[in-house]
Image (cartoon, rainbow, N blue to C red; front, side, top):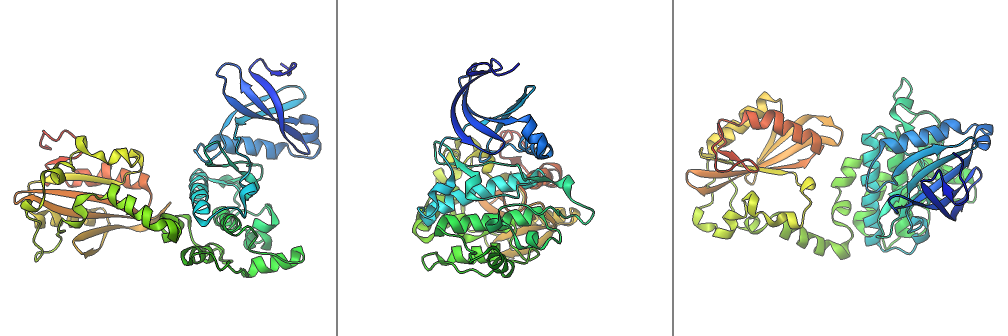
Length: 438
């Protein structure tokens, strides 16, 4: 079973050396069956056991098997011989993101930060905390997309003590959160968010936010959140960074709030106008500026004559062209039709919300906002409902998730909301529109 010549276990062709560490080497490899390029991390068993790293290696392998995300290096398989351990991973040939630090525009830093947050959020949803996020552990593929790697210091949710916190002090000093330094226990998700903030600062500024003549001075600045943003940072970026690099973990911004921030969603000023134009054109076509929203007795619905033929058929699932621009799995809206009056529809929505212990937070500008009463994994769930009159006896209702976890929303929609609204629904879009709902 040993590696013979340039072939590993008759499955992989071993190639050039990609990197070398204290306990092993990383080689380029090729799957002999699929011809797929891979990276093979090769470690000496005796050295690993001698320095007590066996548990760390096991944890890294377990962690990588738990996470599967487009912005995380994929683990293909693990093999072992009498003397060696081989970890076969996705080959990422674009190099380290660290090499680009100081050379990036704010727009480029925005792109990589979005991908980093997406990957970290996925890890946290699986109960995995990286604990060593830094540009050296972020790789780029051939398409310049980010890939998180090196889970050697990661922790699983089972590692928490009875106080619900992690206690192992680890990470790279310049990127570690102040509560980790304090050795009083820390939330793995909050400490990862801090490290993401330091990474963002480094990408956009080309230097560390916390610096000093020695380690103790740097730690002092970290503990007090003592840093200044360069003058060329946009106002929105500065605002976000001060919320992420908050030394108090209890008031530090969450990943969900980061996702909702203006800079994260729209990017820096020089690309904001373009992004908003694209979003407006793709997500809310012609109707956004022409339809009148209704939610109160004194608000009249839009007359049918104000909708042209294209606008009406654009609601049809079969003729919906937004799929050309927006990936289907990312869409958070659903629509149904009803032959009931608008006030009856609103009354039913209120009845269902009350039965499900949901809060109708406000009715503003024709939008009925329905909100959960407790915090979910990605914040409080909320969705907006708008009603449009196609004819005096025919309405179209659009429900769109605006915050919270998408999985929770879909479960609530399918298991509770759809059954609860059955008395007023003529047909749900995506169902057979030619058949009236029973």
